[in-house]
Structure formats: C-alpha cells, structure tokens
Length: 144
Image (cartoon, rainbow, N blue to C red; front, side):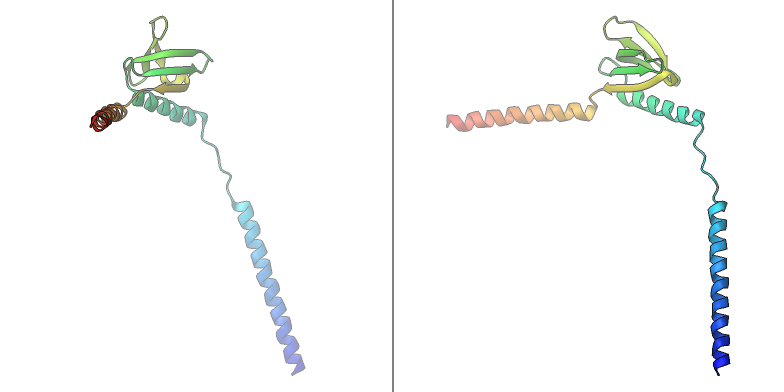
C-alpha cells in the first residue's frame, strides 16, 4: 500500500512538471510570437492632418466673419479672413494690407479661428430680446 501511494505521488509530481513545462513553453512562445506594432507612415499622418485643416477651414466658413490666425510649416504667421475655400487650397485676405494669398492645405501647421455660427447669432439675438422685455416689464412694474 505504501508503494502504491509513493507511485501515485510521483505520478502527480511528473504530471505537475509536465503541466508546468507546457505553461512555461506556451508563455515563452507567446512572448516571442507577438508581432511588433508599426507606426503610421509619415504620408498617412500628413494626409490626416491636411484633412483636419480642410475640415476646420470649411467649419469656419468664408467671408469677413471667418477670421483666422494661421501658422504655416515654414513658421510664417498670417492673420485675416477666408475669402474662398477649394478642394486643395483656400484664399486668405490679409487683415492689414488686404492682399490675397492662396494657401495649400498641406502648407498649414496650425489654424486658429473664430466665426459665430448661425445658432450663436440667434442665441445672442434671443438673449437681447429677452433682456429688453425684462427691462420693459420691470419699468412697468416700478411705475405702478
């Protein structure tokens, strides 16, 4: 009976060693089997950024209310408004001189702009109208 127990224990130890070996081998294979992650190519990043610039310019719109501050890739800074926007470039009218400059989207490094959207203009108008109505009401109540 003692021999049987010893035999069972040694079989258990052997099984544990086999399982441990398989787990270690599997984890090593997994560690070396991981493929490296490659970064996006420079062209992909530039195309993505150019699309963001194009979307930003189209969001601002065109006209004298579409004021922008631009920083180009060659470190040039420009201020003005967007006169027209095309698929590949847009026209910027300089704020001081009034000269028109055609700028390709890939030349732009940074765009800062402001333009009140139609919703913003409506909200301001409604706010002013409510303020006037409140003032008229208060004046009417105070005169009674």
